[in-house]
Length: 121
View 1: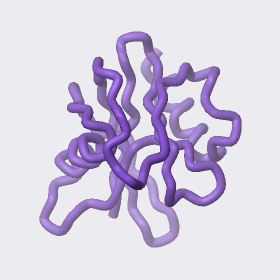
View 2: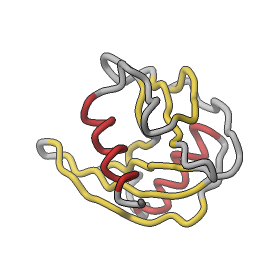
View 3: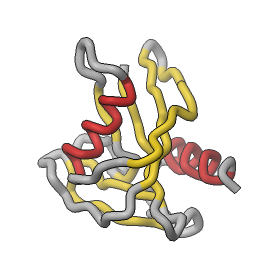
């Protein structure tokens, strides 16, 4: 079981990370595996902190999806700091508008971000 976090800032831009371990394009939303005994919201905050140094505000669960036998819990939250790469698993990070996400980002990740950002309008 894992978590993912769609993080936006006051400009409405979304935080994307270029992950080393993600096949194809590494660009996608922050996230990772839930540790045994860890609550999903704690895992979401921890993963974001470990990968970027950011502390999340207004964290809330927005979706649960399955990928084969795997379950992913998706959260939304806000950050006002820029963050920085804090993990060897991350090549770089950036804040992107919904219409300016990396072209080679996976279609699934792009779709999730676009849908959840549209739900906020």
